[in-house]
Image (cartoon, rainbow, N blue to C red):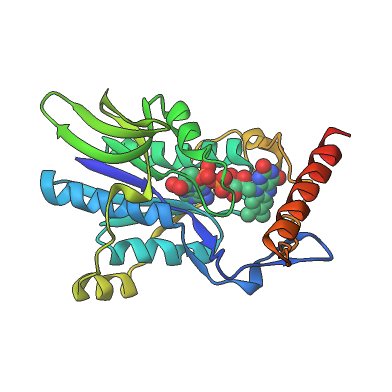
Length: 269
Ligand SMILES: Cc1cc2nc3c(=O)[nH]c(=O)nc-3n(C[C@H](O)[C@H](O)[C@H](O)COP(=O)(O)OP(=O)(O)OC[C@H]3O[C@@H](n4cnc5c(N)ncnc54)[C@H](O)[C@@H]3O)c2cc1C
């Protein structure tokens, strides 16, 4: 079984700051990490390989430094990695990103068919959750999103059964293979990497493919292939602190009722 995991390098949003003048992310303020949802996808792929055999590949689109996330995946137990990196890819929206990644996966599939594609549920910077479904559409694969458990995989009957998170709980869904799955963090716990995989990762160099390495329509790539554009980005307004009412119980109750009435009047006007 060949599992392909899509991994994105993202700024660590626990550290990232906004530039108040330009209203853009100050990327230099944060270190780059593997998108946390994608780390869980890699962990799940490695778990499935241990149970069913086969190979785990990872693919990422990004600048040259994104090879660090591929190395991280090798450390986590992935077998090989591909980086899609080219100046013409810059400015890609989710439509163009899913197109480029699907072209990369198709190129891998020419030599080595893929049975399962795993993605994170969403990236913690873009947050759209559109790229996984976009890749599935372009590959012509069924898609199972928000998966929190892979219940079973039947390689003879060629199907997979999963639990999908829904508002009221979960639903159990079966799909034929190949298919694409996007995973929740709750799908597994990330384990520590063994020393041999850490050594392998330190020496590993992924294959790097640019625009010339696969047949693609330039009109579907980068800014040209991106019908959406980010007009501005800004942090939510800071919430003012709450008011502590002081006085006797009667006084506090009266002030509270007055405040509530005032709020309702402001809301109605
Ligand atoms: C320089 C720059 C310019 C941009 N310009 C625009 C723009 O003009 N308009 C616009 O709409 N957006 C723009 N973006 C944002 C861009 O669209 C998103 O970063 C990208 O499409 C991924 O979307 P997302 O972060 O919402 O991923 P999601 O859809 O939330 O990601 C879901 C999953 O898809 C996979 N995935 C996502 N991205 C990648 C990747 N790069 N490599 C491998 N797997 C991946 C991962 O498994 C991830 O967990 C720009 C980004 C950059 C860096």
